[in-house]
Each structure stands twice: as C-alpha cells, then as structure tokens.
Image (tube, rainbow, N blue to C red; front, side, top):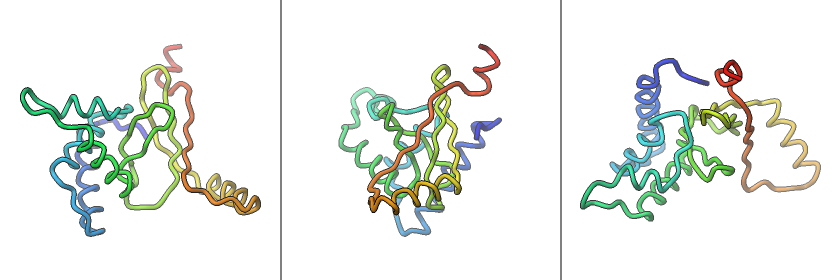
Length: 153
C-alpha cells in the first residue's frame, strides 16, 4: 500500500501504534516512539545503525542496546516488521491484527509495500501441519520492481 500523503500516513501510524500499546497495557516510551517515528519517516527499509545515527545528536550518542531494545519491543507488539534480506525494519500497516505480512521490496527505489493474503496463510498452514512442522518464525519477502519503477524501465 503506497500512500499519497506520507505525513498523514506516518501521523496516523503513530496514533494507531499508541492506541495499540494502550489497549495492550504496553508503554510506548519516548525512545520507542522516537525509533518508531524514524522507521515511519518513509516507506523504505531502516537499519538499526541508521536509527542510532539519526537519533543521536552532538554530545548525546544513543547506544546500540537502547535502539535494539526499542526494536525488540516494537517487533513484539507487531508495530514493525523485520526485513530479513536487508537486515532492516519497516512500519506495520496493521499492528492491531495478527497477520503474516508479505513485503514487496522494490530493488530500484527501495520502496516497500506490505500486503497480506489469507489464502497464502491457509496454504502455508496446511503445508506445515501436513509435515508436522512447527513454525517459530516466518518471513515472506518479494524483491522486484514497483509499478512506478516499471514505468521508468
């Protein structure tokens, strides 16, 4: 889902995240909120060390464990997704519902779209059940070109 007005998209995502945390009795602390705001700064992958650099100021370096703890919290509450192939993170569009995200990553412009498919989830569930396989982690990432970049090709 690509937005037409990213400021509205990011503002809405942060408000949604705060509501999700409140409903779950979790606390979106200032550092967690700052990390989430930086991740929602665009629809591109954000690496942990980029977050450290952006959140640090002269004389005030944010330490890596602080950022990683915030990322762990955001992941645990479904507020962000980890992009395994890029070792980076993206904001989640549906943090209030349990879902398996399908991340479509444009290799040219870096934009990442999130989608979900109940049909695909059903197929994967049936497959793992038939194989008596217990899933502990699942990531679906598709690399290619977004519609905008295809027009430029």
